[in-house]
Length: 235
Image (cartoon, rainbow, N blue to C red; front, side, top):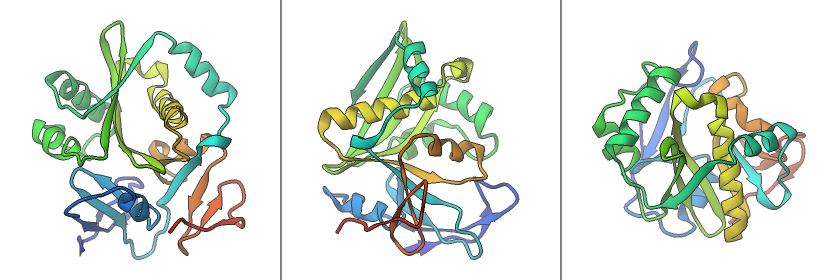
């Protein structure tokens, strides 16, 4: 395990962030699930978690799939996107996806990532066997794509990007709802959506999916509506 030096926080611009990293030789079934319950996330061949000195805002958020119920706004999103074709398969970096990825970064995450081909192909798409990709198209046009890790007891949203010209379709919401549906189809009980950061617009939207649980500093999952209710992690 190694730790980096403090640098500008990718989620809260007025703060510094510090992360610790692992590069596992292999992520077998169940291993990454255990790491997520220790607040780790995966990107490419690396798993990481925050190790900030004075901030604990990054909290892993997960949905109990069997108890999830879409809100009225989320049901509207499904109706609005009834014409979207959803395809699950192996991760594959293409020039078409790279174009959408670059435009997404310029519109949503300016300055945080380079958007070059190596970042996409050798970073985001450097995927272990547990990685899948879900691709969304409207009449053949690429709406968005997401890298998703699939374990026997958990699915995890790794990264999602979309065409900013089609943002009015709420593709991020659509992506979460599609993952919930796939979890239900596969009998997977938990959907991990990554870090929830209450004061970050790019991260706080996850709390709109209910019910959900948040991982606290003591390693206990607590109901997002009342974090005094403890849910012990697996293992």
